[in-house]
Each structure stands twice: as C-alpha cells, then as structure tokens.
Image 1: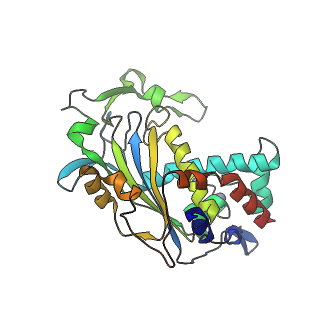
Image 2: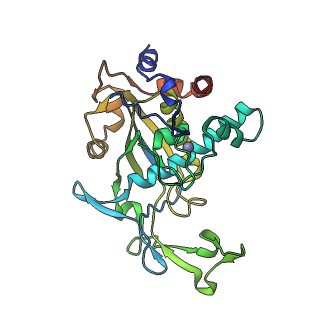
Image 3: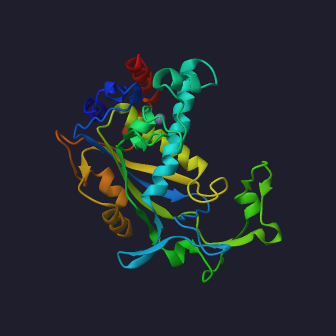
Length: 321
Ligand SMILES: [Zn+2]
C-alpha cells in the first residue's frame, strides 16, 4: 500500500526525455519541488582509504575531523557521489545493451542522445546519468544541474578505534604503488618509481559505520530505483583510493521517503551512539516534509521498490521513443 502511494508521487518519466537545444540534446531542467530522501548506514567490509587529498611523499592519511566531541573518519560527499555516479553509468550501460539485445551500449546512446557518454570528460549531458548527476559538455558550452544531493558523512566510531594508524595497534598499512596505483606512460609502459615504490597508508578498518543521506530532486521512479542499485554496485566495486582492493561496503537502507528529512547526518550519529538508530526508522519516529503526504518505505518495501528497475527502464525507453 505504501509502495503504491510512494510510486504515485514520482515525477513522470517524460521528464527524463532530453530536449533539443541548438541542434543538441540536453537533459530537461525539471524542477517540481518534489524530493525523495534515501537514508542508510554504510559499513566497511574491507580496508577503506577515504582520502580527499594527496599526502606527503609516500605516506597517505585518512581524512579526520572533530565532530560531536570526537575525532572521526570523514567521507566527503564529492567522493561518495563520484563513485556512485560511475556505478550508476555501468548499470545503465548494461540495461542499454540488454535493450539492444547485445553486449553493446554505444549505439543506444548515439541513437537517443547523439553521442556516447563518458565520465568525467565526455559527458553527453542528455542521458539518464547526466540528467541525475549533472555535468558540463566537452566543449564547456552546455550544462545540466545535478538533482542528486549528497552530504559529507563521518564514522560513528572514534578514529583511535576505527583507523589503523601509526599510534594504533595495527600500525599503518604498507602498499606498493607499482601494483596498486600504476600509471601508463605515452608508450603504454607502466610507470613506476623503482625500488622506492613502497608506501605507508592509514586506513579505516572493516566494521566501521558511516550513516548517509542522499536527496534526489524532481525524482522519477527510474532515478530512485537506479540509485538504489547503483549503491549496491558501488559497494561491491569499492570506494576510496586503490578501490580495486579496498573500500568495499555493505549498505543497509534504513528508509526511502518522499520529502525532505527533518534530521541530519549529525542526528544519525547521535542516535547510533544512543543505540537506537535502526529503531528510529523501523518504528517510524523520524519525519519528512513532503509537498503532499510524506510516504516512508522501510525493510521489505525498499526491496520491492528496487525490484522495479527493469520495468522502470522499459518505461524510460518507451518515453524516449
Ligand atoms: Zn550522459
């Protein structure tokens, strides 16, 4: 019942159909003032390096910040968005290839948007991904706004407990950049740094929790369902530096609701410390402000929503014509 009410509040799929602007296709600037909030808890399943800047020489440090009376590991919104955007694109290419009845997605993009879409420097600014995450075209002439809003988040645990660093029992991790961060030179040969390629790094330990909130403005069903699947995919691929080996997460979605949340990531940190984060959502003790009646999905209802991916994609393809 809630699921039906939720789906009824989604924006029409036609809003994802790009318009023509000077002979080019551009995602529509649709602003309905409707919003969907996705709330959850990410738990590291492997070593995680949430690094937003390069450290000195051959040492890398985890971003740390003092929040609510403790030092915590910081996971910035920009990184979270970047990884989830790529996962979202990978998912979309597979769906497009399936629609083509082949392993090939480029002709789908060229047919519907006039160009393939490559993150970050060859954005088409017309497709499902650009319409949700925003972007600037390669010529720098046309842009779309992002309808996905992310927030910085912080570990529930204190860094002394959750970060492996010089002072901690485990000490820093030891890596080899030739294998973990190899860059090809102009001839395509791997460019390493010889014998001094070993480096030390701090990392967030497995089992560390990060609460998160993501807003999707003017949401279609495909935006919301595609986002849920993109998060799962990003979890398996990895967030953070050296993501091929590190940064795997398990995400628990606590709520998917219409409306803006009347709470923040900081409130969620406090609830987690009080031991009642999950109960707040399961018992419906949190509130959202929607234009109409706010509808909150939890547990199995979120799984049932996620099951609508293929149907929503088919509807999108039909709308594209
Ligand atoms: Zn695109």
